[in-house]
Length: 246
Image 1 (cartoon, helix red, strand yellow):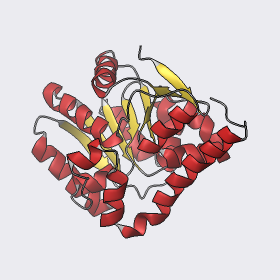
Image 2 (image 1 turned 180 degrees about the horizontal axis):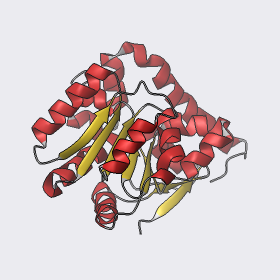
Image 3 (image 1 turned 90 degrees about the horizontal axis):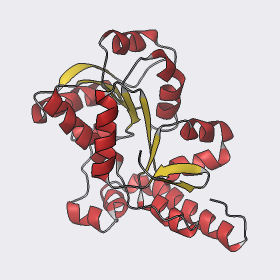
Image 4 (image 1 turned 90 degrees about the vertical axis):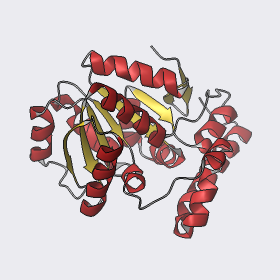
């Protein structure tokens, strides 16, 4: 069992990527149903203002710190996490596992043309993956056909890119209907796989300034970046005023 640390009322994985991947692989082999949240500052900010959403995040089997803002917050609350675990990187690790072991994978989210291109590129890079199916993200919350398809094909990995909070809520609301599978919210990762968005070079990632690269490439993201800094400021302010709790 991986070590965890509590940050703002949520238990985060306190490990490196290889340890996390190994544990999730064991759960795949044991057919253990698993809910993974890739929590960035925006998710934590929303969880702080919406108790019901916070409960959804807390219900996950694993919550990983996806964003340098989460790492900064963990230090401010006196519970420093080991390292940032990017959701896209975890997705890549799991796809590699699926390729090595021919696991069945389902993709849900994004625009129709984006998910098609993403799946095409994933299949090209990982030819031994068993793609059980995919569906765009313009769905009704209670669309039973998607649930039926995942159930029927006994999928091992389900990547849900509906954006937050929709993807976490979709997983939490439907998880009980499945017998097995790793269910993970992957945000805008399908846009990267479809070559609609480019990830920052490794050096930018290593310096924890991937956010700056994205901002330079997509100036329209300034509001999202501002939310991250607002989140860090809020945590810092709570620490100064004695309101901060782990």
